Length: 252
Ligand code: PEP
Image (cartoon, rainbow, N blue to C red; front, side, top):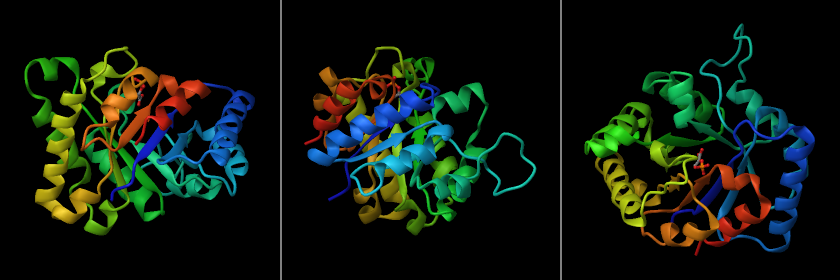
């Protein structure tokens, strides 16, 4: 059975002390009541080492939200996958729509980041998803296919076992709009089909595909009940302890 995952993407929120406090309270909860899902906190870089210390010997995993595309050197302001790994983090989000649109990260650079992250022992949460106009003109399958193929399909089958795909329709991120469970299922099934054609049925069946976009306690259970939805990537609601825990608990 493939792994269910709920990952919280804190984005650029919370100063160090606030972040540590949130991580500690979520960690304490899941130490006492382990989740059915793997729970990942994707914090800003500055929180990673401190949160890693708190999470030691517990149930939660830790991730970053981005990484450099180069291994080391004169890249002022960048953070390499090796540096992320050295904090104790095990995951990195790559290709979030905010990175694609505000920082102009294209499939080529995202593919380089994914390869480098994987070669440094990180698991990659690779985000794909269409903007509103693309959905309205019926291009969402084509857009997602292009992002998946150009972002990931030169990876080896072994590398793919350390990749999680997050389908995040851009029109649903931070907007309060959510894909219907049927819309999510349709495109998750499509994504799994692409992996099946390229890497075979077994790898596709084991691939965890997350939904992201205004997931909240009130809609999580219905979305997560879809057969090809294996959990969620959670933005705004991951900043509120109770909401995040309720979303994790919606996993069956
Ligand atoms: C995200 O940014 O990955 C996300 C899903 O955000 P939100 O839950 O706030 O829509």
